[in-house]
Length: 324
Image (cartoon, rainbow, N blue to C red):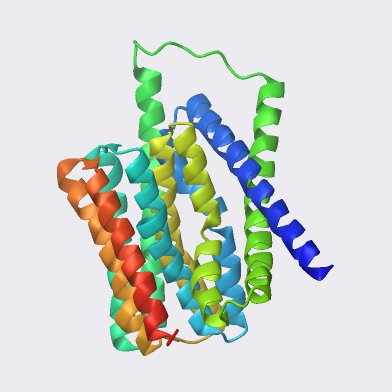
């Protein structure tokens, strides 16, 4: 009877995140069209903040309880999964052009944050000073998005060729606000149900607790980004997908980790295994995904294959290091 309940809740979680992702991308696209804000900006701010809620909750709660390894591993592991798995899927399915002006600053900020995390691993801890620098990077990221949004809206307003769109009616606004809210709740609750009941299901069938931690928890908290990306692929919203992943990664590194450090009230100690494997893997997939695009102004399937390959090797090495 207990197994039946676990399976039922697991399936409910799938339904929640699938339908939540559908509503979420619809509402985010509508916001972009009505406001004139580029979908990349919507993806990198509103969508990213909402889809990083699971990582935020897990890491901050873990730090508050003194489980610093879980706090760091969840945030950094989610970034690696976001790029090595989720962005890889997006690029493989929808390779395309990328305007340097849209991606350059965000790419530099994300790589800078990743390098600071690697530096923290080298030092053996994330101190308050680095945490403050991270928060500054987050503030720059949000400020840049706001400036881009204002610039885009001004350009659209001043353009004489722009066809004036009819203003949305009250019913349309209410419907999309509800879809956005329901989508957010569905994604977060669905991810929570999948992680919790997926772990229980794995235990029932005899999978190692260590394997559960490496796979279900790390990837599980990234499910909102995965579902949002898959939904965006189906709807051919590639800018929304990549923007969401970039924004989510910057938030994971520059907001979740510093908050975890501040909540714990002390520097976050970083285990040697994380410093040697997890943190460099995070920087490596970030470099493969973003550095070539800075010069070529496009995402290619070759990058997708490389990212997926690196992620698979990383998972194999992680299991080997854990003695599985």
